[in-house]
Amino acid sequence: MVWPSGEKMSEVSFECRSVGFECEWALRAPSSEEVLRRMRDHVRCAHNLPDLSQDLEARVSSALHAA
Ligand SMILES: [Zn+2]
Image (cartoon, rainbow, N blue to C red; front, side, top):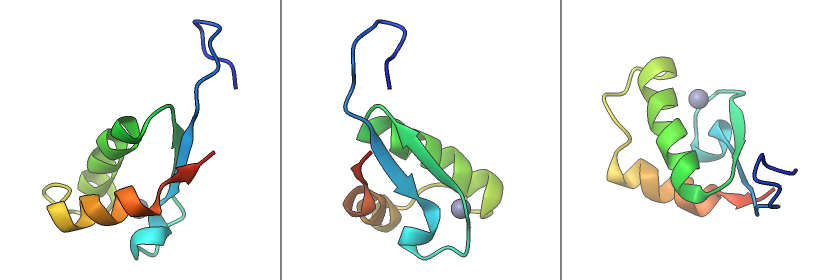
């Protein structure tokens, strides 16, 4: 995928179910930081969690893979 800058970024992808939720939500983002930021919003909205716990953040990080 080519971003507006014209520069090809190395994307990462993530599926919510890979950390144990029964959830079809998945995303691609240009960086692991962006995945974590969006995942934090997602768990608040979709899973009624107050925040992404350190444990969950670690599991998200290890479940990321290159898109
Ligand atoms: Zn989810």
